[in-house]
Image: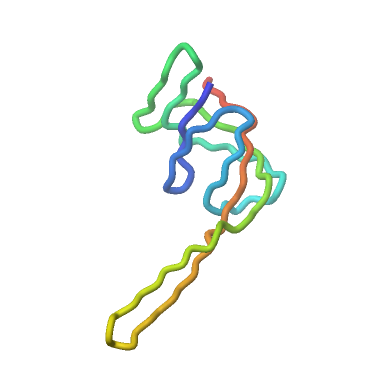
Length: 104
């Protein structure tokens, strides 16, 4: 059984006991989280596609912790002008573990 959920502006294909990272969520470590934006559910026999979400479907996750992603460097340069600009960015992330996928 797997599901496709939307968290923030990204979509993830998840199944039970999966661990995945998403953009930072305002939840404490160890907290339970219900994801309601379930776009698709496959239970092995039947595929249910939402329009845009599947009714009465939810995914229960546990917050494992917060971390920062790897550093991404953006560098701007103009030749012969003496212009250089270096910017670094590290995305704040939340690590989630899927506990249950349910469709009522």
